[in-house]
Amino acid sequence: MSDFNKKLILEDGSEYLGYGFGADKEAVCEIVFNTSMVGYQEIVSDPSYTDQAIVMSYPLIGNYGITDEDFESKLINLGALIVREVNENPSNFRFTRTLSELLEDSDVPGVYGVDTRKLVRSIRDRGSGKVLITSTDTTLEEGLEKLKATELRRDAVSRCSSKKRWYARTSNPRFSVVAIDCGMKMNIVRELNAHGCNVTVVPYNTSAEEILAMKPNGLFISNGPGDPEDVPEVINTLKTLKGQLPMFGICLGHQLIALSYGAKTYKLKFGHRGGNHPVKDLATGRIEITSQNHSYAVEEASLAGTGLKASHINLLDNTVEGLTSEDGRVFSVQYHPESAPGPQDSTYLFDRFVKLMSDSQ
Image 1 (cartoon, rainbow, N blue to C red):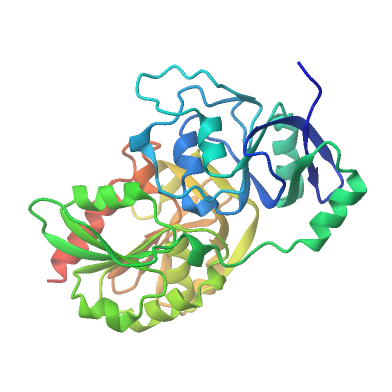
Image 2 (image 1 turned 45 degrees about the vertical axis):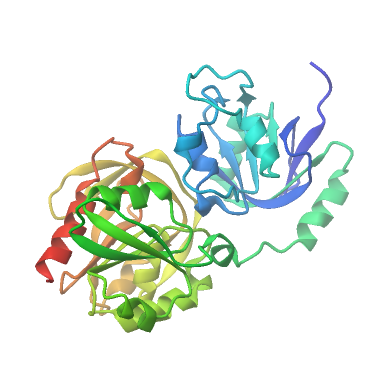
């Protein structure tokens, strides 16, 4: 094989050599890792990864290609993809493009041939931080200076949210749901449709008055990228709507509900990303195998006096994985029930939302 032509430079001064695929460009991103064995197309098209460089811990990525029907978003907003081995000859009768072709079309750089095992352990031990994806011509001193001079953006939700209202209707609908789009995955819309809900998707900065004027049966708050405190527009909307509509939040939506009730959030050392996190439902004692993708968590001690209580916990680190309100009209989960890691461990949450809307009529 030819000499390395790409490298990663981390803030601690470590360097990782590899080969480029996808777009040939330099980028500074937040580096994170994902432990999923499959689902790379859903991962790279998940808006929650906006501006992040994803290190895949599974060693072979790209082996079943890219399929037009499986995208979670029309836009590919991730910062970069880092893998041990990339397959450019997929074996899948459904594939229409290779992973490399998708990244090149989306202007996203990729690096393969990296010692991802060592890199994942480094992120686990030191925590997530900035990374420079660059050519091997860049010296360590130059790379560290670029990292120091580059501030990570904090406007990710505004860039990946819908720019206008749109509709996802289903046959014989029972309920009308307004979904606040903070970077929503399409499979959430599909699940709501499958549960008899017409969905009106609105931009993240839609006001409470506009939402109430649509006369929905319930409000859904979506997943999305970044720090929840960077989205005060949604927090203020939820404060106004509190008690007026049944609410269900997933991932960022979970954190935004917590903030709107007066709780606090904090950044995890390296986040939760992958399809293998065990979560305990505190009401039933049932264990769910969940799919996750987030950097922030709700501070459990801050829930006191807010009207919210923890409903689920992560069995790996005891972080809060779900919330419910004292009046029972609001609930949320940190994980992704629509991602089917169990594969049906968590679909009851959509049933719960439907029942909540039915009981509120």
